[in-house]
Image 1 (spheres, rainbow, N blue to C red):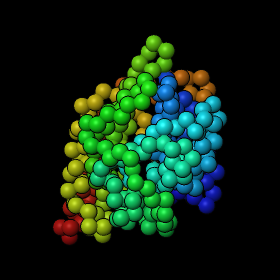
Image 2: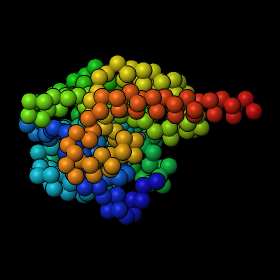
Image 3: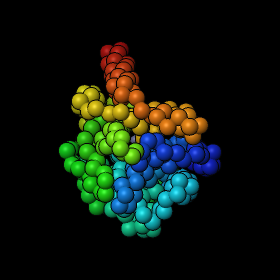
Length: 271
Ligand SMILES: [Zn+2]
């Protein structure tokens, strides 16, 4: 669990993932930055407690926080959204979120996972744009394809987009919500969420298999070994994230985990 009373212990040196995509997050949660040539897109704002680290990382990479034009959220849990309100006040950035998670970030429903972390979510906001499946977010040289992948939350969005390095173009992709915490039957029942989210998650995995992704980057470092790959990149291996097999392997692992959860819960219910 995140040690948010000592956020600096989650420091990870920022680095260029590949091309115009950068990692600016912490060991608790990933934040990514896209340099579109016409402003910056920040993917997830993280915890409020780690926002100063994210801002410092952006600065260390030579960018100006004030150039953030869009903040695009993977889903409405506190570890991905709580820095947004302050950043919007500073930058005037436009915010994007999957339609199904609107009530999470406005505080209408207590679903941000704050209670589970013994925290309170006070940094509520109303997104400028509610995303639906198939939407595109365009800025500068970047066009992000938005794929609705419910399960982890009702409005989880996954993103696929091209990144460029000189004359080379590759496709980057992120699955917007992969943890089993909010897919457990007990959690779904407690918050009056549909049990069908477990099956939605399996359908989301199948949906994402259709995407070609060269660079699989996650929204939590541990799921894609962000720290290890970042260290390799900082040591000079610029293509550490480039692996055309990583996306399907990542989806395979997610499918194993959800199937294990469902089997375990079915066994428990039969006892
Ligand atoms: Zn989450």
